Image (cartoon, rainbow, N blue to C red; front, side, top):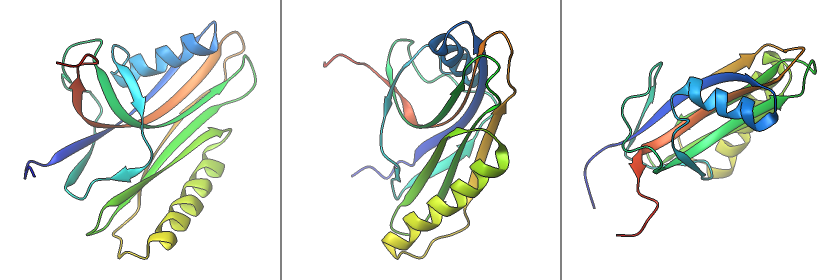
Length: 164
């Protein structure tokens, strides 16, 4: 078992585009990870992980590789309203947990869902947890295009999608 600390980087992004997927790609680009293939995982933080909130993504390896992520994503149709996504996390001596809020229309609702959700996850585990942290991203509505917000936790660096 490696003693090397795993780094989970938290990044946020906003994007607009003529289609739902184009706005999602723009949000990933804003978050600094649009050139990778994302593999979504459930919400457990390994015991030895270090979490860093980043404003600029470092080099994660060759483009086209896969990234293991936990992701909150909200997309709104043209003129439908704001797109708000959020990610909460908490750690313990055993491991940690993430809780994602996707589909939000305002920051207060997303914050409340994150608090309720992470508290429920903590209650299931009965571990002694530290302080709860969260990141929320709001993209303002756009009358002509789709809008997307993402908050993503990236586990480590990219890896090849092909077996060696």
